[in-house]
Image 1 (cartoon, rainbow, N blue to C red):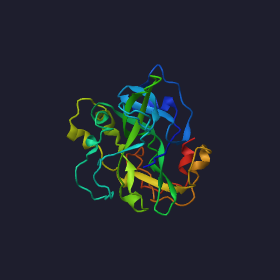
Image 2 (cartoon, one colour; image 1 turned 180 degrees about the vertical axis):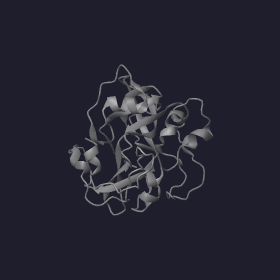
Image 3 (cartoon, rainbow, N blue to C red; image 1 turned 90 degrees about the vertical axis):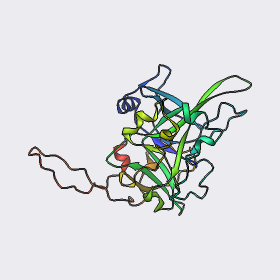
Image 4 (tube, rainbow, N blue to C red; image 1 turned 30 degrees about the vertical axis):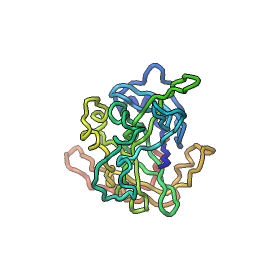
Length: 265
């Protein structure tokens, strides 16, 4: 799964959103409308610390860079990407993640991501009600170059089967998005394996949306034009009820057709 994502939130916003502080070595990275293999990005490795790691994990034991972008929650099982798969989540059996799934879990910060439909159409996928930035479930590791001895810390994003909304456009897999109330627990070092695997489910369709955009094929273009809608959203969004001064709720109204990126700048 060649997953690319968007991160345009400032470091200040990220610190506030995740109640975390950047480490002294962190230099703020420019906002990006296309983060892909080899790019630096923000990750959180404990509830209070933000780092910049390289996207594309190389396990500590590798003899050369591998740059693994995603880690399958099911491991080598469910090769057909059956959304109804009910077997074990065997990610812990994969040698490249056997260590990191237990002791090197992280939150990968993102504002949205891209997905390809079975019609070869790319979509921008995001959380409704302007819930951004949010966190992918990630794994990280530190690799030392065998000749130069240089250390590189890199990360991968865990992927699972797609939810109903994405299945509707022929997308088979999606990154694991952590619900807000799960984020702190995901980083706890004391979790048992069963608890870790319980996080690796598809994010609910009703809390997400997507719309078609131009296809992204390389890093030659990295600006807001990548987010321009080329068609309708997959789902109708509604505003949450607003409590009036009289303490009575107003009826929900459809959200305007203002593109997602208008609120991302």
